[in-house]
Image (cartoon, one colour):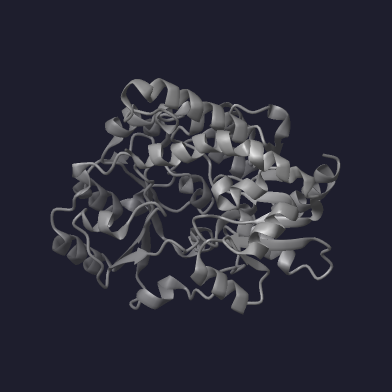
Length: 403
């Protein structure tokens, strides 16, 4: 059974549990209690609004961050944050009382059963290039249950649609993004607002919102070299054999010669073991950035970024610095999940499909002047979002009261 199928079984179980959850609606909600969370860690769009409100001394909203991570809970508690442990009575009770809940991925960011009847604000976590939700067949399709596959798939689609229909507001940063999300989630266009997303207030700014994290580049970059960050997307069906690096020694020698530092920002669902299966081990020139490290606050320190079909291309693109595309499984991934746009067009045909090609592209990266060819990227350059958190907070206050 695949990880996606295991996740979808939990969605199906919700269909049988929700009638009991519905009874919890007798507990009154307070529209002045706002709940935030992110199952990936203390990061991204919910964090930015949470901290924005935390600093507002005139704020009348009662805010909470909820987490399953005991260490994160202790860390936030020591920092005098309003934090709740997911499995505590207090965490459950306040989740049931919260009038507004903010998501970045899905209901697993919060207490799903407690949050589902609150006013749901979806902030998402990027601009999709790869297909998601109903646009990606593998998201809801079962393959491991024989004759029951069709029934399981139908029930998963039913549950997924039920959850999506509970969303009250969905924030996006362009009409392009709006149309993709509307279609992928199969939800009404009227719940979307083109406000920009909270991370736009952080990217490119000098505002450091990291919690107890020193500048990783200052820590490891001891020779004032250039910082390269490789931020690949997660693979539902595993990594291609061509992802394997034949000789780390040769690669390290190249990095030393050019005075580069190679940081691998792994996806939260990608394990260190998977990275090491690429033939890569940590050393002075190759550093693994941990799951809880929030990339949005460090773009300004990156000299070259390497991606595949991640929206980091749009976020980092505002600096007009080298963006290199590295995809060793382009055909396989396209057949498995699919894309909204032609990666060849987005990269202007410059897709590196092996480590040798990538190394050569790094060597010649200073010869290019434009790196992303996409309407969403062009829109953000012409209409850079500003004061996003302030605008979203005011919007949610107004619209949630009328719900």
